[in-house]
Image (cartoon, rainbow, N blue to C red; front, side, top):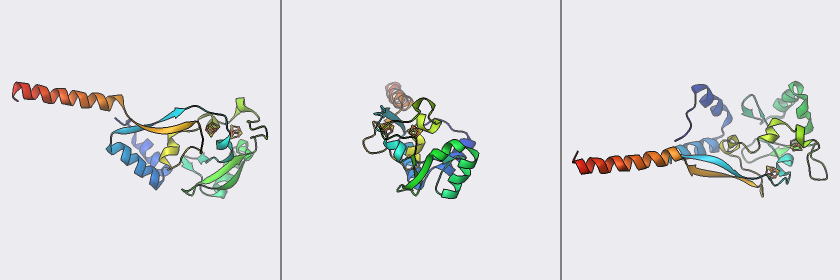
Length: 163
Ligand code: SF4
Ligand code: SF4
């Protein structure tokens, strides 16, 4: 069963998801599945060189939106725009990524770095970087499996009692 969301959460998602993300969302819902993240970070740094950024519940598409973010949150000035992904979202590279292939201050990296990859990425139509140690996997939740089994038992009971 999908997690229950408040109307506010659904509206926030509506602003955040892309068309492909919505297709994925409904495809999962129809099959009563959910998406989970599996794997480990291999410390390859690919996400530090091509990452999407989010502000006010939306993934950034315009450079001027990004400059507004930097005004409010100077810590984001470490990022520079390097292109766009296939969904049209801006891609950024981080200047804290050193030539040694590590983060300049891994202990104090931003929350977006700590939380990467988030399932929101899946619903924006995004993917983890090629060769990333994580992957998105669609699974049937335990609640869905249990409900299916209980429905089968229920059917059997009805047949046995002739109802
Ligand atoms: S791309 Fe994936 S494996 Fe590489 S550093 Fe980022 S999260 Fe870790
Ligand atoms: S702050 Fe560190 S972990 Fe975050 S994107 Fe920059 S280099 Fe990567």
